[in-house]
Amino acid sequence: AQTVTQSQPEMSVQEAETVTLSCTYDTSESDYYLFWYKQPPSRQMILVIRQEAYKQQNATENRFSVNFQKAAKSFSLKISDSQLGDAAMYFCAYRSNAGNNRKLIWGLGTSLAVNP
Amino acid sequence: NAGVMQNPRHLVRRRGQEARLRCSPMKGHSHVYWYRQLPEEGLKFMVYLQKENIIDESGMPKERFSAEFPKEGPSILRIQQVVRGDSAAYFCASSPQTGDGYTFGSGTRLTVV
Image (cartoon, rainbow over all chains, first blue to last red; front, side):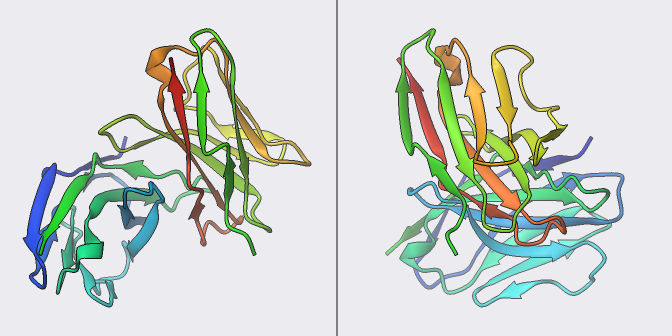
């Protein structure tokens, strides 16, 4: 069975600085997706970035980028130029691309505080 | 095009009552997923449904929990005889058949008193 591990329950960063959130996963599959979701206090789940396993190039979305190391099964999220609005829970998630079942397997999350 | 609509946003039930949570998927989405988020935890998959079919219920407790996605109307997650441990946020997500465009609702927070 697939598992996702986030080893940092809490992180903090100064406004305008860079922070990296860690995520490792375990799977025997070769075709899958990885995601980072943001959950602010409003509780809405917001997709931050996604990575397809067969793509070697790391995904980037504005200030958000990932370091995807397939062999090491590592998928970290880097937030550059941190803003106060980035403060939230961040969840790493895995999704198999086999069959039609698109259920997500989640890590326990990292609570990110942004200090002014 | 409205997103995934969940209602109610907040639901309070006394122990032993029934809770019904509703999820209307995005227009054109035929796949629905339910997740539960316990306090201070990530989401746990509960059940995956297509119209009139339960495809994967491997994450759903065997007792007291059931889900449906009828041909017409929203998907319903039903919890009978609720207990305090059922208190959680319940999220619904929908997707089209291709799996792309996976979209979450805002969740229902269930509190059992």
